[in-house]
Length: 170
Ligand code: HEC
Image 1 (cartoon, protein in one colour):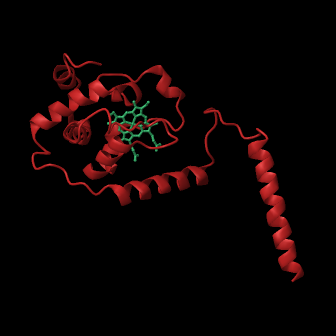
Image 2 (image 1 turned 90 degrees about the vertical axis):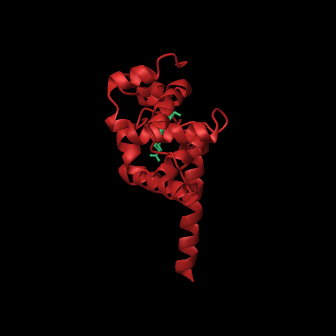
Image 3 (image 1 turned 30 degrees about the horizontal axis):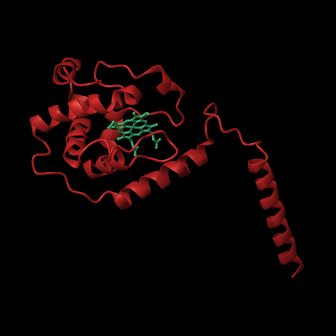
């Protein structure tokens, strides 16, 4: 019984200390420090599990067609993805280096994620990270083209990206 009382008292003291820390303004809300590794790993696992559970849409039949990849490059340029993630031959904006978490290299993330997962992410965004939802800004068909382009990113030469996006509103 005494042990239970002690555990309860410690729990209450811990809760009060945490409340004081967070509501008292001691938590540093800036982007200027890295999450400790176990916390960063836990957040990444929560993100991956959340996306995996929700990514249930299937790509259209012509998903792999060259037209779709090229149309996707246009969508990529128009929606402003390159500002944060960069693009073949296009450097990201300086502000993106001030983001935490940092926008990842889409050549790597695109290979790690399935088309359905990328489709879900671009449609719905990732809260508390700066990755926006584009479901209001583009149609589902445009987003599938975008996904086709992201999947092909490692194989897209700079010159092709420049040609495909000529005339796109950047
Ligand atoms: C304002 C900056 C910004 C813009 C614009 C932006 N992103 Fe992101 N994006 C991010 C950040 C930050 C992350 C990292 C999220 C994280 O760590 O979980 C991210 C993550 C991603 C991921 C990886 C998700 C995962 O589960 O690992 C994909 C794919 C992605 N973005 C695609 C895009 C595409 C395509 C566009 C354009 C339609 C775009 N992003 C526009 C900031 C941006």
